[in-house]
Length: 148
Image (cartoon, rainbow, N blue to C red; front, side, top):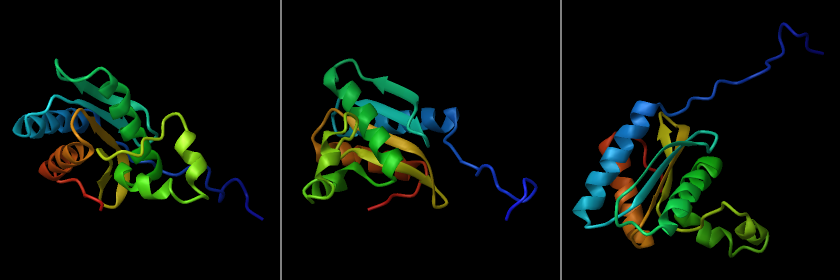
């Protein structure tokens, strides 16, 4: 039996800083411009709460919610959003496809530093592959881990 003195009551939860979130948005803007894309970009903290957001002038308005949901999905499950297409085809996981924020479309990545998820990144405005490429370029440019 544990006593209050030895019972752990919390765990440390590293989370992305505002400065790093802003730098990611800058890196995404640069990568999107190289691809000729107008995008929305969302950065969440490790709990899936919006930390930073930007939408270029000509990005479709639907891209706002899609980018936020991609970042939320990536942070909450700590896997890229493009893998969800395969997951929701599995009958045991299929009901998750109906979750209002789950986004099974490429362009969302967990933001990982030294093996720890510290947030989520979501890009929307191009094709799923273009969004993935922009997200990967931005994460790589800032030295974050890039999961498969």
